[in-house]
Amino acid sequence: MATADVAVVGLGVVGGAVLMQLARAGISVIGLDRFAPPHTMGSSHGETRITRLAVGEGDAYAPLALRSHEIWRDLERVTGQALLQQTGGLVMAPRHGAAQHHGKDDFVQRSAAAARRFSIPHEMLDAAEIGRRFPQFGLRGDEVGYFEPEAGMLFPERCVATQLRQAELHGAVIATNEAVLDIRPTAGGVELVTSARCVSAERIVVAAGAWLPRLLGGAFLTAARPYRQVLHWFPVDDPAAFAPGRFPIFIWMHGDRSEDYIYGFPTAGTPEVKVATEQYGEDCESPDTMARTVSEAESEAMYRTHVRGRLPGLGERPGRSAACVYTVTPDAGFIVDTVPGLPQVLAVSACSGHGFKHAAGLGEAIARTLIPGAPPGIPLDAFALRRLAGAPAL
Image (cartoon, rainbow, N blue to C red; front, side):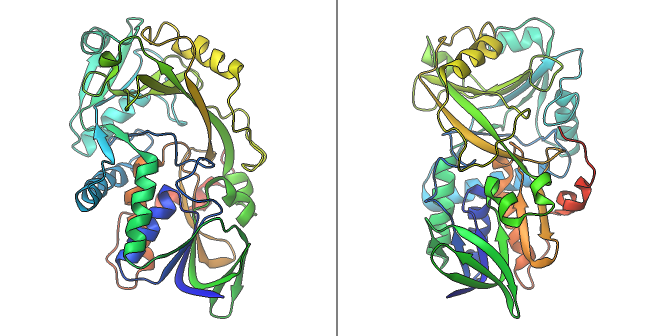
């Protein structure tokens, strides 16, 4: 039997952020993961992740993204690790049309409105100006773009490892390759049954990603559904043209349907551009049995549907591909709420494909709710589970 004030289940980027903040505050905390993070089984991998500050998904998110940038920079100063690279970020769509992204219409203008509300530096660009600055894009001529100079890319494996190392340095206990099988209340708090032992704690934070719905059951089985996603690294003819400083991270809605969408990155150490899309049409039954390899047909479809003509400097076949898993709510938002019937357990999940950029700030805000006497952090009320009752699927 192990004991702690708080146990954190799942040590991806969000769980690791909570663990680090609690340990820094002197809280007795243990973190558990069924694998050995950073790993490739969940959502916190893939070499790069987009970060942007003016978040078109809603006003609850921008404060978390802004605070996350401050925390990443602080961690860089403390550790010497390069975690965030500013590249500039371009969000673009046809000038006329719905251009839906993450369940929100008119995403370019929503991003611009968020930038104005939170005083985030930005520019609005027409197709001619986008083409002048970034000739790497094969534009149709009717695009409008939101450009954010402070946007860029995070390095997920490095971010996860750095948070966990800092947590250990401040006294956290980390147990890897230890699966949590059950959670049950006790007279003094709550108990975890793992594949190796029992862990007793006053509070538990479950940040287990795609494994959370089955672990917690009930409303979470429908509120947070896992979806397999694929990532591709396409070789480039001219690596210098796609290097940071000349090419931004980008989000490109090229049609009115939610699947008419592509995002990508500058080169990051190899002469390849990482490009991906998102799909919410087919969820996966279990992250344990999800296909981890990407078929040639999937890569061909990615090039044919999204890349061809839009990024003419990329080769037709990716040099490599990978799969990851998103855990998604019906409104593409987050969940931060206590578990019905288990008030000692806080569920943190369904970052819905846009969670990494918020994770450092989200972890700090969650930790403050668990630290006695801590000043209130960024409000998290918008992520309550009750909002999803009867919500239609994406």
